[in-house]
Length: 92
Image (tube, rainbow, N blue to C red; front, side, top):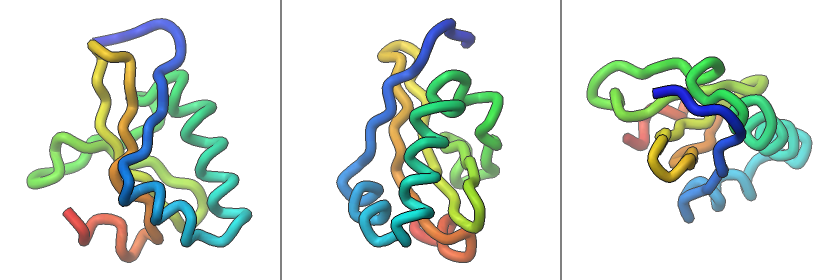
């Protein structure tokens, strides 16, 4: 489903804790990436993941990944994980 306009970005409690643990420059870059280009078009920048993570998409900023779900009805992107690329896909 397509949508014109920006999606609201929300973070789960776990994703918020993970963002707080990132180096400051990485956290700022990831937040700007999510609230900018990803919010404008979450499907263009997010890579669809394979099972068992097929409900999620992944986007990257440097060596870090954010995994998120898109809710077109609520015009919402829910960030569920933010982690270094070596760890991002392990928690799900």
